[in-house]
Image (cartoon, rainbow, N blue to C red; front, top):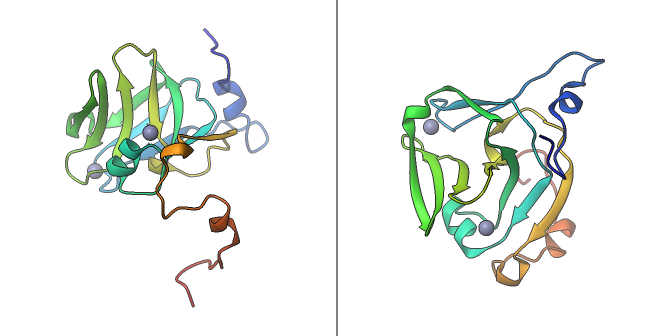
Length: 154
Ligand SMILES: [Zn+2]
Ligand SMILES: [Zn+2]
């Protein structure tokens, strides 16, 4: 069943002249590993205070994945969750703390935490949400003008 806004897995796998390439990810310690085996949505950057606290960052980058589209290949037993609001559970590696996905009881998809992806999945660019609640120290226009370095600042 194709959902609107999702990319077909087939399209995602048509990289490198038709060679199949699986999208996969892992937590920081490597204990948890997963494959994306279904459809995945566009990239959404969420600036809400709950995401900021959860990830200890200015915003969280996520994409919807269908319920049958996330397959753990290792360490699913390491996952613990925190219920940040009623029915919304945020799953993370209990060893290293990497957040992997969130799931609301009444939703038919996972929200995958894109920082845990390995490689370039070539996902569609989506949008920013909850800018009304963004970190006061993060200016969405100003950050684009900042000096850039490939590694540490010189
Ligand atoms: Zn881990
Ligand atoms: Zn959020």
